[in-house]
Amino acid sequence: MLEGKVWPKGTWVEISRIVLPPGERAPQVPADTAAVPLELRVKGFLQEPAAVGQEACITTLIGRTQRGKVICINPRHIHDFGEPVLELLTIGQELKQLLEGSDDAK
Image 1 (cartoon, rainbow, N blue to C red):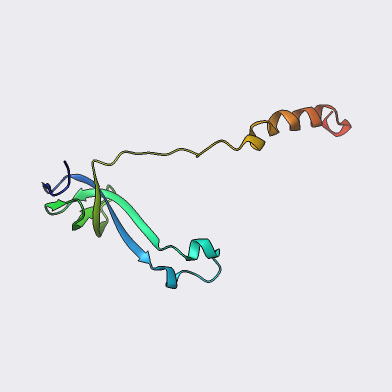
Image 2: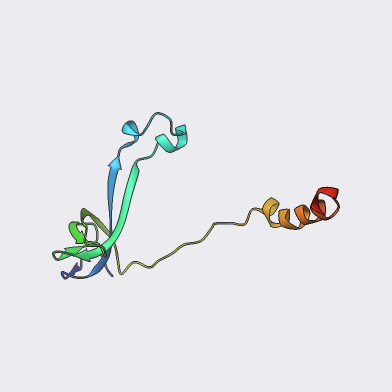
């Protein structure tokens, strides 16, 4: 549906660009991290008409200009902390019990 459609200047989009390919990552990063490229994703307004998958120039909300491949039109703000870590769910209660039973806590 959105593929191939050319979106007008001023459309809110997200672009992507490879900043560092896998072979150029810093030597101190873990091996699994070094095996993938460092990717920049940034949101902004198109400076010229463009389609998804096409290279385009955008202006961010703070006025910076960036160039990259359009990956999303009207991107949402999506954020979460991932799956719960079961061991961390009870740690507050366990710590409270330890401190209440300790002479140092009083």
